Image 1: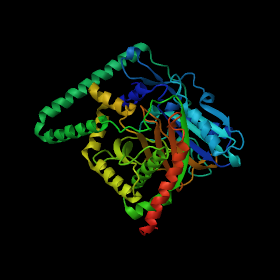
Image 2: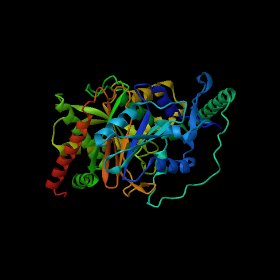
Image 3: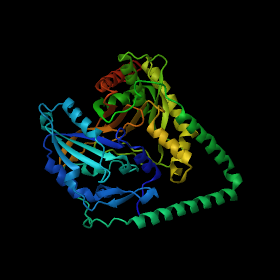
Image 4: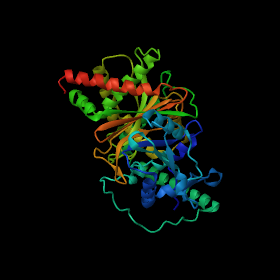
Length: 472
């Protein structure tokens, strides 16, 4: 049986355009001593642990089915692993400029959908690894496929040896068409069995069905409501700005101990505060303004999934018991603790509500759903001012990681822009710090670096409040 893209992954390809490339990114900065040859050799030894690293997408003739993964008979590792160097002095600004340009370029769909850049010339002899991976390669619960490069100890590990890779012959056009038809027939049969099951036990499922319908209606109402106008919603260009920042994880934990809630609640609160500061700095009136943020939450009533362990840059994945929801984001000038308490209430309500569980249910039905649900998913992803910014936060390892015996010092994640949303913020905890990766439209977010400074100020205000509260 051919490995076919899920409906959700196929929709990501459908909405992709030159102005909305659908790849995620990550930047890992390593101590002195890591060379291009070291990285290339390590990846060459472990590439068999990433099956899709040597696969490309094959379209089905006449669009009769979703694309399938096939082996790339002409796979060339040197195309995907590339060497770059920063001009002196190799500071953070120069690094951000280089990765901004790399992130802006779409991936070539005729090849495996990933690229890895080894960037030398950083201050202190350090090296950065920047990788781009299309979202269709990271759609499951396993996290970043290129985390295989990272070792838990400085001594490394032996590669997991298997049979020598030989590309399988690509399926013919006839086989692709026939296989797509068979899959569709099987889906119809599954739906028929489900309908017969419902008819056989109407009393038992009536209450549950009514609840799902009501909750699904709430999801539709929430995601189709327009987001308020803001400078963060514009017609996107084909170019991106990337910026980075970092926060002491202990500071966030201090705030959580003082006021309750979760680390994610604190992250959402400081992001709202920082975005409000940025808008007011631009001269935009934020009085009584609630923006709308797309943020992942773990829902009650969904399957349990293991914690995501991000690799270089912490891929932000949503699956199993984690779904994306749209939440209010207060950005008006207000007491930082009051903002945090409001965020805690909003997020708790979303996680407990049937709307989040219904969103998860709708996602699971995406393999065979009415066209209006597919259109709903596409609108949600492509914007039209459904939300103002995207925010993602994932836990990472708190012990150091290594490549070829060289320690990774920092790890920044990046998530793509979509629709008319000109800003995304992603966070990844690693080795005692929270690393922030910000992506902005080149034309609409010329002041993206300032957002990092405002994040730092927002955290400091909450830490001061926690100290006054006795949470030091």
